[in-house]
Length: 277
Image (cartoon, rainbow, N blue to C red):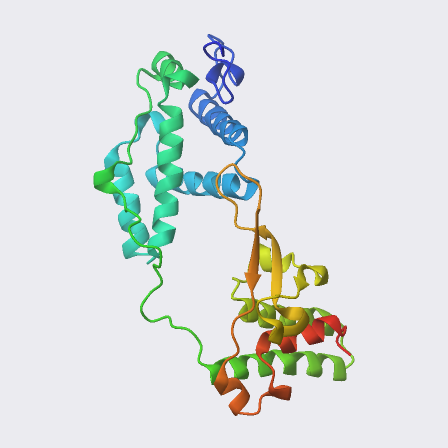
């Protein structure tokens, strides 16, 4: 059984009880942040998630102009209003800011970590939760993209791929360094499109050996499946492994006489397997 004050992030692990501090407000706040970071590490959260939350919490601290034991729901309301009206952040971005602030307040106000008692002793008050259901956004639908955004048409995709290929040719013909990264990016775009994967770490970490045959779709040859080894992870879990089938061929792509009658993913993989020759 974990004794009181010994949990990762507890006040007793970051401050010596009863010891006077030279700058108490600043030092206690930094100790709380260190404790919160350790608590998230103990939950197996990704370092990128932790650093993003820390950054957003510091942004709120600057906006509020006061310390956590003095924060009120009004401070959160003003900050959220500023994010929406001045910075015009997306709905998902707003939720991530609110989630970071809610998570920190839950940690700082949890009696298991002794920060409430520590702040009460030093400052005569203690942190409370300031993000509630009535002043935060709720995630109610999977797709929250803005209406102005839409998928590319086939012609627009072709123009985009052609432009990416032109950058490779232009860089190589001019004798400049950098044509290989440009080629890598061009192939990355086509592979992501061909298999319907987002352009992020799961696509960036693909290897040639991750692409193989799909017995249920032999028409795709050696490019029918892709084994994603670095899929988006859930909280506290390692990257998720997935198998993604190639997107079905689009009739318009062949009808217009696109390169060799191939789909974009076939052309991309052919370039990738051929080493750009």
